[in-house]
Amino acid sequence: MKIAIFGGVGFIGTNIARTAMQRGHRVVAFDSLARNGVDQNLAYLRKFDNFQFVHGDIKVKKDFLQLPKGVDCIINLAANPAVPKSIADPLYDFRINVIGHLNVLEYARASGGLPVIFASSNKVYTDKLNQIPLREEGERYVPASPELSHGIAESADVDGWDGYTNSPYGAGKLAAEKYTREYGNIYSIPYVINRMSCIYGEFQKGVESQGWVDWFIRAKRGNLPIRIYGNGKQVRDVLFAADVADLYLHQVEHMADCNGKTYNVGGGTRKGFHTSVLELVHTVDTLFPGKPLRYTLMPWRQSDQRYYVSDNSRVSEDTGWYPTTDVTKGLSIMWEAYERGDGVRKSTQ
Image (cartoon, rainbow, N blue to C red):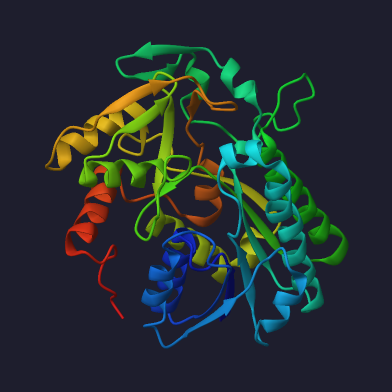
């Protein structure tokens, strides 16, 4: 198949592109190269024979004219990925995450109804999540009720009908989800929506505002100070990008089985696939040499969830997929790549 990946040389896109090409698919990566460092990802992907790059911006509809004929499926990862950026500049966020995705949907419609796999976010869920009763246990929050033993399900509140909000980023992702469903209903565009949790892995260019797992590794290697917003006991499930790639490729190859579905996709509730911020600091310090990470506690960020762990049961039941790379293994893969100086594992091509 020929797969068009929007945001195709970002870190998730690069992981998916690598896996796709190793499986024999052709990849067209459409990317604006706006993120610092992604030119390194592009250089890596150009080593594959079944790769094509299109320098374009999803906000600019005429850029889509550069795409080649014969695309079979679309994966849209192009986005503003950071909540703080959406709060500082909501129009910028809207132009990318809503208008940009509409341009992708229009391209799919104009191309004969191409399937679209859309990377949404757990941030579509409102701040009502912070009303979940929690208790402190060591360096983390844990649910005070057993009803969350399976994690947060797709039925969690997105509407905020009782006054809870999403953040501009979450609102934009939710709007893009709704447009995706409308294009499926009205124009018969096959689609899958994946509500992604915290993703980390190779090819990532982590910074403080986005990509915190990779940022902690970079800070460790460079003996850089970090800032932790809140008390550090907030919990996230963490999902390695190579595991993400396996899921997306399964969806590409089995679209008929997934069409019209919305899934929570994260590390899930198994031990080793979720961590608090403070726990990750200590995990990095335990696993790797160097001076201990130095951190300063800062006030809580707006729209920060105290506890988010995905209920993966729906996507696992439909696809047979589940994460296989726990946080210790994932961090070690990333550290070893940095030690080699190439930032990635060697290709198996």
